[in-house]
Length: 186
Image 1: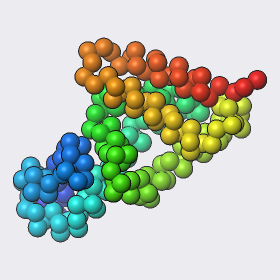
Image 2: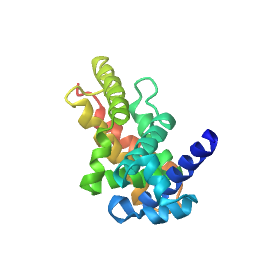
Image 3: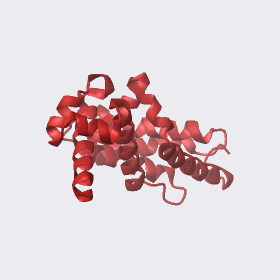
Image 4: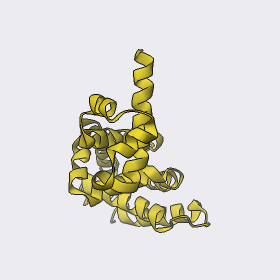
């Protein structure tokens, strides 16, 4: 029985991610999510409470997915940017979920979830270490620099849409932008 509940939750989360990626919180419909997951609305509410909490769980999972797939290796923010570009090309739903957090006020709440803030704090610590090592211009606030890097990476992944052009070109442009952004002033 326990396995069945876990399977149902997983199906609901998968259906919810697809629904939220297309429609955000406001446009998403619980009945479509339940139908796609093969679950009742009552079961969905029993597992997740309400639509906002379901969205928060989907955002947490998407952020975990990005965080686990794309890490800052050592202190290489340039390579990190390139990996982000490639990740968002391969996983456009992660990009859409992140975009919704910027577009809808009630979606911003998901960015304050403990798991999301913990991952961000780890990345900010890496930026601080790179600054202390003289590899990154110390004029930047680490949190603001991480936001700029994310905007650069997501811009190229979203601006190209379904371009037939290779993500490698966009990766190169994003990496060069970050290289210039972080270069310490001598």
